[in-house]
Image (cartoon, rainbow, N blue to C red; front, side, top):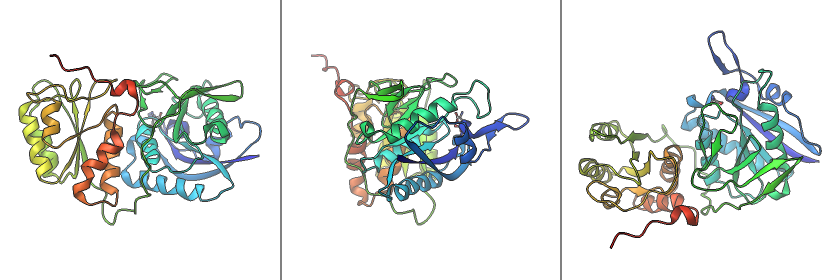
Length: 341
Ligand code: ASP
């Protein structure tokens, strides 16, 4: 029998009607009661949190990260499933992936419909997640997101639909595989950077990391306000392939000079950010000291900034570490059009 440990954190998969809307309420054993457990798998449940994932904090995520490591300290465990709200699943899964040095799979899943809905998707997703976590074919793939019969690499995967069953994808890369007929099929082995050591729990509050989105008319007011509020990290969600304005590039240079770690991603769903444009574009943002985050989108760019800030390296090395953690991770996304002659 393959022993799989399920870490329950809440989300829609644990949610019930509260009279005015749904909220996480069910304990892990109630969530697991909804699952069809694949043959040959035994399940142990760790009840970690019962929260909807839009309310998660860095403290929750670090507790989850440490719990995954504690569970995997038992060599008899074949794999781990984390049940999680879908709203910020991509952030927690990526944080665990960045620190995952074990061959055994850690599989995140959830549901789009609440636990007791008659047409719910919890049972199928749990079945597929357990199957994947127990499968030798999933070893060495890092942290995975299993949802609606699809297997995705945690890295690069985002929530792409608010309500549909098929809620996750990496818009810049093919999926890792799929489940079906009681088995898993792996089509791609994700590229991952060297995993980071487990960070020590922060002595004080978690570092403040803000996100600012660019738009027509955007000025540096919010970016400067984040720095004034004590941000140690900033994610600029730029336009296009990573472009903003000369004024924002100036504010980024000031933030970097003040010791803030700045990452640049984009509002566009797919493709890499790239140093193509000046006049406030990614060329100038990079020259100002910001790190372009490849094909990672805002939530995961922020997670990478968090990991870089928590890593035990000198401050001067953090931009380089962030670059390593966020480098475009597959050839097609990394392919940048040649500059016009
Ligand atoms: N809609 C969310 C979910 O699917 C709620 C949450 O993220 O907790 O789980």
